[in-house]
Length: 363
Image 1 (cartoon, rainbow, N blue to C red):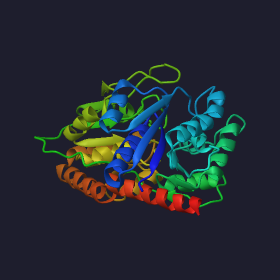
Image 2 (cartoon, one colour):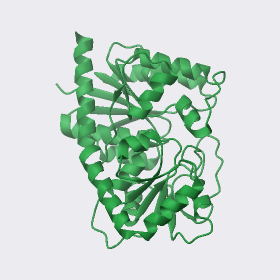
Image 3 (tube, rainbow, N blue to C red):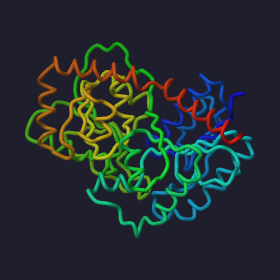
């Protein structure tokens, strides 16, 4: 019998895209009943997307565990998740936040780790987070990993970080993300596309204007949110970036299908859904040389030294000047993405985890 899975999500970044796609694939391929619980307030676009995917969506205005002044919301989160799981008769809880995994309920719990504060701080700021400030977060993360029946991570790079930073004394399974093929015939490709959260220092979008200074790089489009959802502060967008603002998924993929090159200067990106979407849309990938990107893309991308504007400029100029290299990288990235990072594979792997853990708990 197909399970009823309660999947927790949030509305800030790639976790929403991951859970929406996973839920839709589990329905289509495994006849699972899926209920999404969003921690935060979904936008109208997000609600409509859940409706089109025929996913039942609940939401509660709770702060996430990495946000400021979140302690009371984090304390409430496990009971909110458990109460909903009981009321809908869920067979499995798939938590995508540490707090959501700390439920007191006798049904299987899967925890997927997409990122974490300690590895974010080390990669983004070059130093470990202040453990005095983040002591409660560390306790929460360790409790979540003890409580979950299975812990997964979106890359081996992240799994290794989690194991070392939180002294995780259990295996962490790796299930890479997937995404649908976004390619279509297009009359021609031109320019560079950059996407991400401008306010997030991990995305390091500010490196792009520095690398573009003093030479003609052509059109550089930026798709993403400039306003921090927590503080409300907006970050100035510097030339030559031309802002498209935050785009819904269909509009973003349209921009990707028109671009020749997708650049990600991220210091920290444990998997990288945006590069995957760009590769499937036919872009050549120019990525910062960080462990997760090397793991996911191997020789199917061009790389520059992370945080090095001069090296980014050199590799960018080389790609713009060499149409043959650009075409080769476009082909390699798309072939690797289509062979390795499919939504069907991702859903099948999670369905296998659900079945295995349900059997173990029932036994």
